[in-house]
Length: 275
Image (cartoon, rainbow, N blue to C red; front, side, top):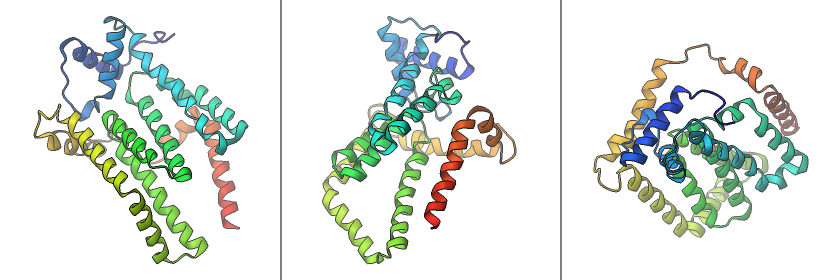
């Protein structure tokens, strides 16, 4: 029942721009409407269904990604356990927020899947130390850059975790900073060739797409810097103005179960850590 609700204003914009891409091959990056991923993928769906662009067609990929999001829990089973896995799958499947956006032609469900995939790859690398996970992580970040500008914040959060974890180990185990720096140097020396390959992949992949196949020499100012300028300015406009606790009542309304478990889990780990 993907067509059971009318098309939202945002959906109509994305569907129309994807239709222009499908029929005329026309696409120009605009930070107001985020990256090209949603338009090229939706245009591909139009291609598969011979140009049928109705309310259901435009929501096919979001619905598929909603299923993929739940399936991405499977690699985390050893961390979550059987019942943890089933509980997480249940909450993702019936969460009002995730269920809504997995029937909605916008970037939200794309970014949710990309974030979860990055999360899986991140912990696979931490556990197994295989170089291939660095390459996969780079490709996932690129997919995020093609999707929405908040990928930079998401990567920053994960990198912040690594920094905090490192300082935590220094504090708890009383390692010297010399040992820690030596460890980081050893890690870099072990993966230096892969790190350079990942950097090259990231740069070439970003430039290739956002320079319109190397045809736009001014892409840095018109894409990368433009996205920061535009979304930085949006924070000053406060389009959804409200108090600092604006989202807390919404969490209580839409996600009380997840919020409750999050608060209890945070309290539990704080008590364990403080002992």
